[in-house]
Image (cartoon, rainbow, N blue to C red; front, side, top):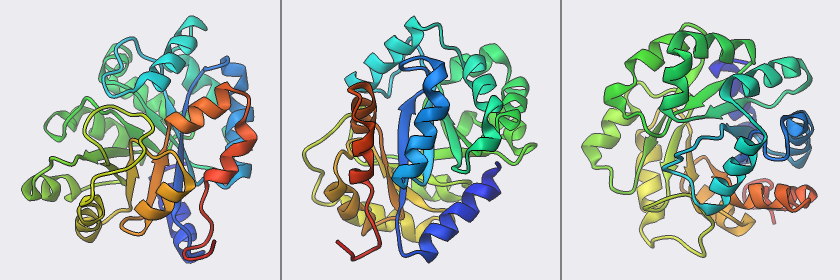
Length: 260
């Protein structure tokens, strides 16, 4: 799958009067042998895109739930190459687009070209590298572009209008709109002006805008979805899977717009 496949998926969701629902999971939490089963479960739950996290020893953007999941995966000796090889082994059995979320260090160790080659072999549609700003993305972007894989960019609550313009210019896949200041993790609520912030980004962006960090309920997903193209849910899904409650994930996914 390429960024074009992901774009086609987003277009289909829009035609169905729905919002994009992206589920974050930690690769190898519970063992890599569970990865295919988990992605198929997410497909059945109505998830639009899977954001597949790669465990890393210094995950600066991750809250406590995802950090613990990463520790469990690292204890299973899960690596970036191992995840991509496992994904490649069943890529033809899944229809849902997969986006890899990793930090820069594992990619540097592997090499940007090799990383992009292995992502392509695994059918990856996009890549998120949260510790690489736009000014430093060239090497990664060039390697991924050869395989039509999107490099996803972030917009934060503190991004100026000028920075938002820089971010959406040439954006691929989707814009990851961070909804809170700080790390990932479930929140009870969001800042009152968040909807206006999301709407402003969405108006400027040539690609869908997805709100992430802190989204933990169907109600929050529906509320944020009124101002952008969809949401990304991480910590809540990681917790449900770890607790053996993966069947409850479908309850987080909103239906058609305006339909309860």
